[in-house]
Image 1 (cartoon, rainbow, N blue to C red):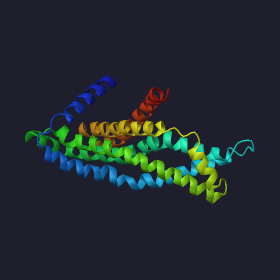
Image 2: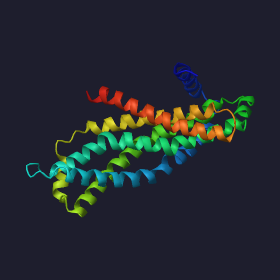
Image 3: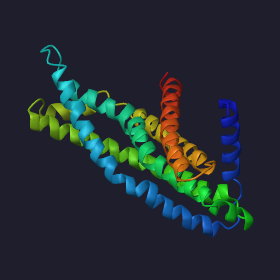
Image 4: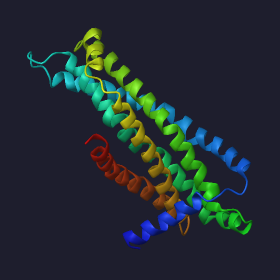
Length: 246
């Protein structure tokens, strides 16, 4: 299939997914389950990676700004802007694309090859809406909270690492965090996290929904979901940066 055919089929699937639900209560129950599976269960990995990335960013910045003419608080400023502008949204989204995207594609792909989706269609259920819409809504709703957690943990990790390594004092780090702070950076990051969450869930669902074959094809669909989600995230990161920060 060509790229345009994939885009067209993807658009039609998303349109079907957002069709009016048959029973709102049934969708609500699935939404709660997906919020736990996709969002809450991802908190741990977001915290761990954010902590260590904040620490690495701070120490690397310190070792690359050893010029005595540069004030020490620039280390905290650089760590803050790196975490707020890119890491807490884009890098976390790429991590979720691997964890959440592969799970979604394999789950829906398995249902497709075992004919469970066909059974839903025979019962008169909109399979796209029933399977995909709760996943999209769940991650879109929780992605901003994951991004905020990443910001706090990343900056905290940078502070702990910087003070422990002796490259910066607490007062200097706090001064850097507060210096020329632009609140819009947080809004910018949250906007990106919501859009990236939609990309991860919809692209991964697309690959899983149209899986054909057996277990081998499910594995391939899962891999393609991660790869294509990551590529689209990086593309939209460039577009959103140009639109929102220019």
